[in-house]
Amino acid sequence: MESKRQQKYSKLIQKELGEIFQKEAKLLVGSAMVTVVRVIMSPDLSVAKINLSLLLANNQDLFEKINDHKKEIRKHLGNRIGKSVRIIPELAFFMDESASYAQHMDKVISSLDIPEASEEDEEEED
Image (tube, rainbow, N blue to C red; front, side, top):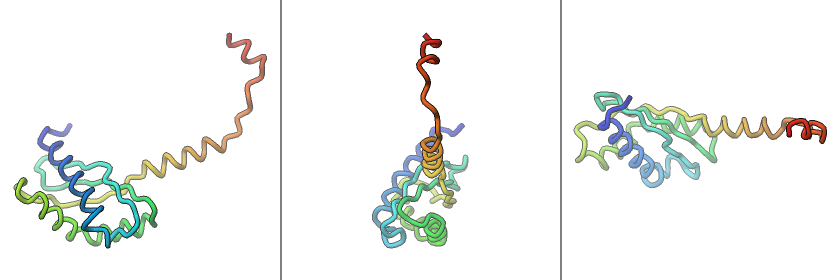
C-alpha cells in the first residue's frame, strides 16, 4: 500500500512525464503516442517505476530508444519539478502490455465460432 506522499508524487510525475513526452521529447518519440499508464514510487521517493503504453510505433525499438535517453528525460523532469521535490527520482521504464493483450483477447473472442442457440434450448431456459 502506497502512502499518501507516494501517491502524490506518483501523480505529479505521471502528469509531468506525459507532458514531457508530448512536448520536449517529441523528437525522440516522433509520431508515436506514448502514454504514462502508471507510476509507482519507492518508499523513499528515490525511484519511480513507470509503465508506458506505446502506440503507432515499433514498440521494442521505441522502448529501447526511451531507455537510452533516460537521463535526458530525467533532466526535463528535474527542470519541471525541481522546486517542489527534494530529489529527482531515478526513472525505471517498463512496457505496459495491457492494451496489446486486450487487443489480442478481443481478436481471439471475435474469431470464436459459437453456434446460435436453438429455439428448444431457449424454451428450456424459461
